[in-house]
Image (cartoon, rainbow, N blue to C red; front, top):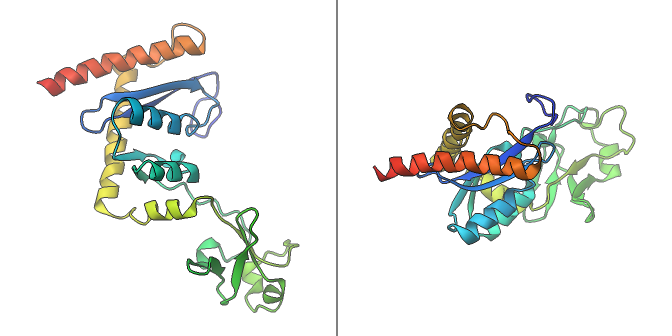
Length: 231
């Protein structure tokens, strides 16, 4: 595992899905530490949907903000509350992506000078016309000196409508409350498992042994929370 803010070394990852009503762990998958968080996510949600109870909503942190996740949860009728990934605009130009306006009806982006960037139909790229950029008075702010294409390009995301529909609600109280519940239940559960239920390290080698270990930790915590909920 080699990630920002994480220790480097050989680790396993325990991916868990919790019920926000009582904090019961209803799904668990263990992977090697080099597997991305999103890899087992959709399969785990589908397993919960089929074997436990069809969830009405799901909340996750920014690691799960991937267009495919947005699309698949929407197909299942599951509301998705997720923190957006930090913007990574590496362009050297002064005008960043936020300076461009998307026209939904025409499926084009409008640049600060009022010209359109059209999709090329292959890789979800939107290109401005070379003539428009060549004569534009804002060219110095929109294209870097090293830009050899001669026209501005924007990259877009697959399943953009699903992403936009979910993020259109991100400032609503319900959306913010769901993120707070995720923070409390998910992060809090991992902390309790590490402190009280032996999740700091595995005792036997191998992925199967690691999964057994994590399942036993989850069972111990679940029994405790079930007893608390019954009382």
